[in-house]
Length: 113
Image (cartoon, rainbow, N blue to C red; front, side):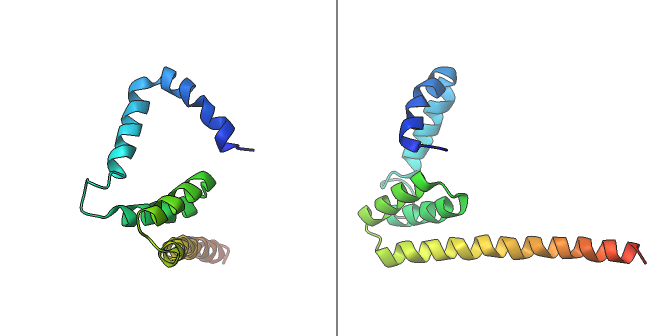
């Protein structure tokens, strides 16, 4: 099982093995969540991050970005709505991929005739 706190200690190994890439990632992340960069306000960016974290099921990211969204001025209702928007899209992906399964079933059924 993944333990984010304990596993995060291995970031040093990652930094030693790929220092330029790790530095580039952290600089990118810092720029994305810099309140003085871009036209979206920080709360909006954090709400997007909450939605993505929910769909990628990263518990550490969910917790971190939900707290950061509130700190940036989002309300609990905003966080809840971001979660539900992401959930709707994730569920929508399931239904549209379901169409592909039904198409395959239809084609398989036709080929047996």
